[in-house]
Length: 571
Ligand code: ADA
View 1: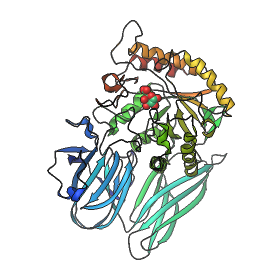
View 2 (view 1 turned 30 degrees about the vertical axis):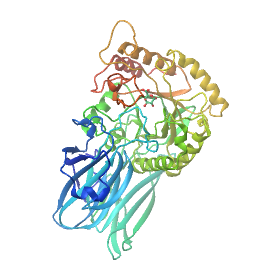
View 3 (view 1 turned 90 degrees about the horizontal axis):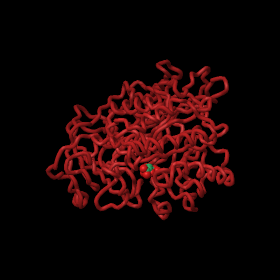
View 4 (view 1 turned 45 degrees about the vertical axis):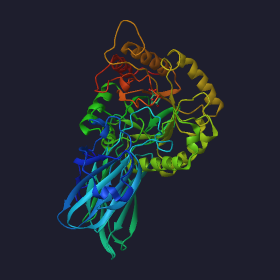
């Protein structure tokens, strides 16, 4: 399942899931002599979507691997092949023809194949999960970078003229009226102009109809502007969603929006004029059995556990997460922080000057917003986490990213997470400042947060950023599930609970802090390999700072945080 609702009623779609042939190619010989065309005897079959690192013998494998499957068409069709996420580098071949290449890992890409013949078609995917100094994330990163086709592969059957894109934007007036603009791009796959009846519906009721002449073989975008009175607002904790459908006689695209106004007042994030104190966790979309190919049923369970903790927000650390997950957040009135996987705690600053690295970062920001623009739960677009923000290079890479976000979406807040709050040069440029700090773990005692925050507020003032909302985007301590005692030893559940209790007391007493995101929701597999020397303190090869363990069992920390978050006690 890709979404919590059907994206098409007319357009036929089918997921190409199940067992695909799989073969490793550690020496990368597959590109030579079109080796893949005689696809060698598969080593094994792997389930798609899935991560190979969850399978026997592939636990540690990083590199090139090939997948192969086939599908049958009973008649000629125009196909749209959608890859919802393939980790790292992906090359797609259909019947031996290279359809294209995509770099990324967490956003979709697609190919249109007009007039595919009836019969059996062979689909081959070359993937490469290798991390380098030019990939995002780079080769040193504190989560396990799996390989594989992690989200569904979808086959869509499209008509001669099909709907390529539906984009809905709005500006809210003061009387709950909305100036709505809907852009529909229609694309023709034929060699003669076609007249197409276009209808737009909101919650099943038509609000616009016209006949559109689409020129042969080209795309045409139609823009419709309307004012809607008395729209029902989407609130935190009380979701109101509108289903928008664009349809022609032979195709349709359905998506959902929610009307809400995001502002910043007195250092608080306000939704529809109401200040919201944010209580959240950082969530990796990861599980020991599924890796990043996280099943929808577990997403609902994660959300139930996060709600039970007393949260109203989640940070999607550290990459765009599944659409199904964000749909759930929309439906449950959650605030969501979305970001790209630029993770910089161990990144030399030279990396950020590399042209390829930069263009990949821009592309990832672009793709994140393109995919998720309609979700009302998304309040923050975040452009990086813990890069070196103390130098000119930080400004050079960041300002174009901020400009890109604002040029695509002026309704949301642009954010980042800094680990250098006391000498960060970027503070004035963002709408929101996220601080990651680990007093009580990497740095001194947890009480040290008080001094750090005093110094930070003075520094922010001196930088002209004293009025910006501050969110504590990461803090916490490792606690090994089941290790409890009478004394708060490092790595015990007791110590972790102590650090979180004290940290939350300090943050909730600081009126300049608008919310907290605990590091982290659940333990995650760490990037610990015998030849790598980073993260040697990751006991069990996990980052153990979850308030739940990796199987979602509660530690003491979950119970103490629940008590604090449910108390509603903040300044
Ligand atoms: C950083 C980082 C997280 C995680 C955390 C930790 O703040 O952003 O991904 O690595 O530290 O556990 O040290």
